Image (tube, rainbow, N blue to C red):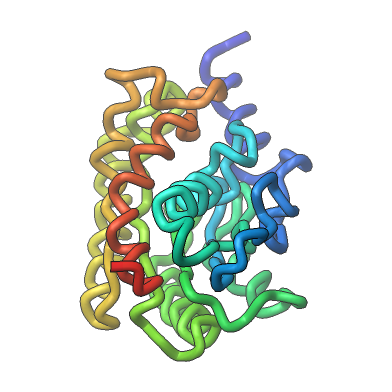
Length: 248
């Protein structure tokens, strides 16, 4: 199969969300193992908003970063709190507008949330959507996240957009340097908004740029992060997540 054709096929199947196995809304992480509080300590709630990087395309549900983050927090703070398996609103291929629509239509969520993470933007860049669309949607998504967290911005964590130019797929799609440059623009705006709202900005992009040097950081599709990379992300965000949950 021609490499260019194969790359296009991957994008249609994975980046644009044709994989029907991905879930858009997973209340309480679809009750993953360990999601029940049997210790008698206070239960806390976590909402993860995003796209394929949040739903964990091409890894097992327990390996995506929201589930790994929850497991780590519970392991460290098992004597004081219990974080329920996360409610996840995410799907491969979602743009910021898709995520906003789904979030606003979501029902039966466990509001208010004690922690909310937001990671979105790569599909806006991939689809070459007007940047102003992302600016508008991000403001609305942040307002949604703040409302979901009972108006408390200290419960929010904003995550940068990974750079898929540093993947086998990205190397065979378009101009890798242009992809990286455009993703930098998105991340610059995300970081600016994090400063405006006074919330942590977790920069996972440098780690995403190690994918070509360290193939074990990539999933089998040659595009998305592996469980190992998601573990690295959790290492970066664990302290801010603890602060958001008042665990420090």
